[in-house]
Length: 263
View 1: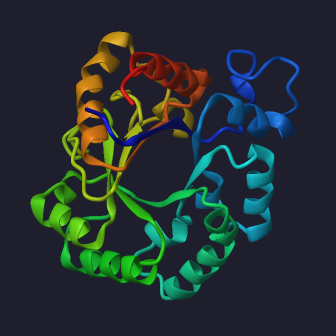
View 2: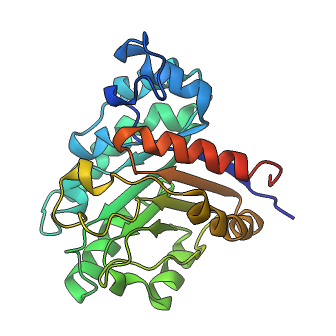
């Protein structure tokens, strides 16, 4: 029987092109987040990847969502895409300070460290990963690896020992990308769906890469594995990153319907 708490949302929300399919036609952009909070109980913030957030920004988002939404905060890109960076301690300190309002209001789901495919499973990268995870140890953490070599039992066991979540990823079936594997390494099971746009994964930009709509026949086989996650984790969070053309919201709502009665 499912026992975990189920959270479903999208990766990002500030997409004007989501009108009118998701946001009502007359919704002002400044009111997008308020509307989002009426539809989903969790959100993955992408903006924090591109620029360091502030505590004031985070408090503003709490106020706009009325405390009804759990936040997954993507780590600032210099921490994940520059393993030779020398001031990671300072950056993580700034990041922690910014997230204090989320922690104080019990709406911080986790911090997502998303590493690129170029972050290889070799000793320098493993040492860097160890260092930043130790620096951020007092935050709820999830790591996403885009290189399949990280997908091994040694990594899983190390994450379990630290109570750090492994991001389960659904991506195109390409040789170097992780395979879909519903592994749980902490009390938080974290599932990101990027779409399966193999043709444009390396050729397209961030919009065309994630231009993909999951069919019902692709979502249905995920139901039993999600039931497994619910039975083996305290919280199961599912985020759709196929944000082009509002497809993330369409698929998130469809999956919600499919999972009705699972909790």
